[in-house]
Image 1 (tube, rainbow, N blue to C red):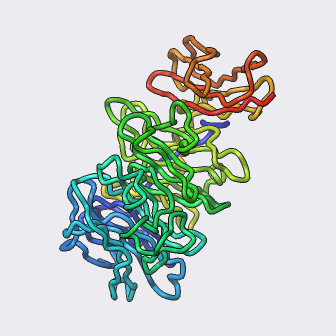
Image 2: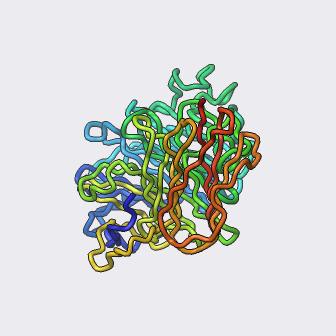
Image 3: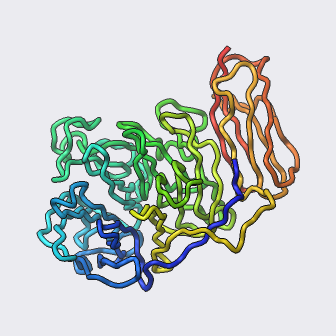
Length: 444
């Protein structure tokens, strides 16, 4: 993979904001954005304030990770002018309110969700997206209570799916009686999550990609399927030993004791401006950990499902909350602490052509499944001690493929499993603070 042919930078689009969290493009290419304290605004992409769309400030609780968080346009916006906002209210409720746009201001508020009770200051996630099915999806954190993620009786630590009026579609996986407050919460789409800040839909199927903040190291990117359990709080990162009850992440993002990556925004790019990024999964984090941060490009594997990450690399050292593709085909990034929305562009001054990988990566083995040998590629951006080991499903180390100091570069190693039985194996790369583990299948 070519990790180094193109350098990127950003240019300011909207500035002077106070803790912007998320944004959407209106059909005229204006930007509607949320600010954490409760004021939703519309700007042109030339940084001109069009309007204060709606002021939630007097009803918003914004300490800690609370606040006015998500925003999404109705898929039929051109006709109905509906826009949805997700926020934590000063009455300690989780609210999704639908407003009707009228001359760049909101009107006719309607509660799609108004659920108790928001405790404490963290793990509220969350953003909203519409699926191709016309349903409204929202990510909600576990509210700081680990056990919430595994409970089907509440909405916390979940991704929810609902009709535009807030009711639960009858084809939801845990639908029982249509009343989210008795039996199962009928709105649940997937569970076992700690704090999935944002998500995006796969361009090719009904699955979605979601970022996930874990408590320690590492953070996750998940491929979310209907009704699946993502393991929190039983597992963080890859479940080890492997447990078929829980869906493993498709990739992990290393952190350290000094700060995690804290992934937030996520986007499958399909635009015209940057052909080298088309159909790549882009991820950004809010964390400024010393060893891994920035806008990350993930190459997706296993077509046509695209439910694996084959390699990943850092495109640009930048933090942010939300990623959106504009109708102009550019990638836009919301930068909370900088109070700005910026546009990704090429840096024509700083092309780095020394062929050094810009990040650690571990590729999916190929072929997979295999018999009896398979190849594993990995990349290291700086000199250091590298180990690559193979484990069985019980977590026992069965062989060491690499155990030495390596210079920066791209490497490939072959594992000949002639002497091992058929089954599932894991291989794990460790280099400095970086750790990544992947699954492979030997079939004889």
